[in-house]
Length: 268
Image (cartoon, rainbow, N blue to C red; front, side):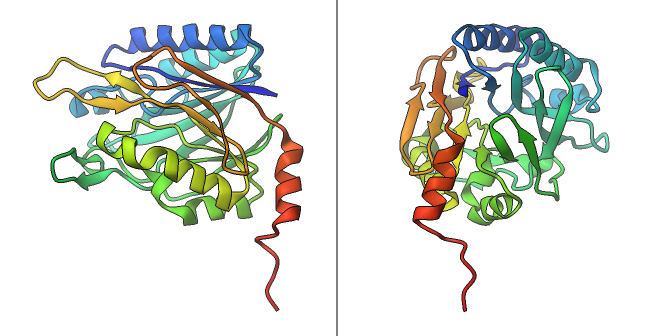
C-alpha cells in the first residue's frame, strides 16, 4: 500500500487547519495513497488557554469533520493529534485513527509529555495544559497492526517495545518537533525506533512558523517514512508546509527482517 505523511503548518484557526488537512488528503489520494497521516496538533496549534477552551469529546464536531474527510476521500487517516476534552483545566493530546468509512477505529492519549528547558532553546511545560494518557494503543488496518504514539514518546524506546509486543508492525509518530532538537535528534531517533522495533515508522511533522508572536513557535518539518531496516524511504524536507512524504509499505519486509535477525527469541 502507498502511504503518505502530510506536512502542515497548523495555527490557531481551526477552519483553516481543517481545510489544509482536506487539501493534503486529496493530494495524497490522487497519487494513490491508501493511508494518510497528519502531524501532532493537526487541528489547533496556538495559545494554551484557547486550546483547552476548544477541546472536544471524541465525537465533537471537529473530530466528526475529520472522519468526514476520511470517508469522502475513501482513505484510512491517522490524525496526528487533537485536543480531547479533559477536566476543564487541562485536555488530552489525542491521536485518532479513522478507517475509509470515516469510523473512528482507535484513539491514543499521549503518555510522555513535552516538559523541557533546553539552554538556548525551547522551554515548554506540556503537562501544565495536558493530562497524560496511561495506555498503549494498537489497531488493525490494511497495513497490518498499527502502534500509536505522539512526538515526545519517541524518546522512550520502551513505549515502542510495548507496541511491538502487542503485534505492531507499523509505528506512527506524528510530531511538532522544535527546530533545535529536530536538526540533531529527529532522523536519528526515528531510524533507531525502526531498527530496534523492526517495523515501519510513519512520522508526519509540523513545518514552519505557527504564529506572529515576538518569539514564534517553529517546527522542524521533515515528515519521514522509515522502513524496518532503518532506511529513510521518504523525507518531505523543511520549509514546505504542504510537503508530502510518500512510500510503499510492504508488510512482508517486516516478517523477513524479524526472521533474519530474531530479536525477541526467548532466552534459555
